[in-house]
Amino acid sequence: MIIFGTKGYLYQLAILTLVCARCGNPAAHTLRKRVTKFTLFFVPLFPFSTKYTTQCTFCGAEQQVTREQAEQLQAQETGGWAYGSAGQQPYQRP
Image: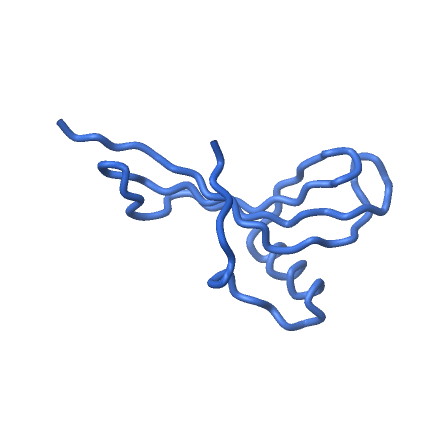
């Protein structure tokens, strides 16, 4: 019997101050990266889906952004110096 499935990881890349498209308030937004990996016998092998989102902390609205937009927002937040995600710990999504 072969046991396979998926496992999701959630990385918080940055916290930005943006004007929300839904509520119109200038509020903190979290920039997140969701990675879904294929697992075989509960061992994550390779990622097959990566999505980037921002979420407003005021109203909770979530908006999907492209990888390029996420990198640009992250560079804006760090003052033009982009960090890699190597040192960040993932949050496991239940």
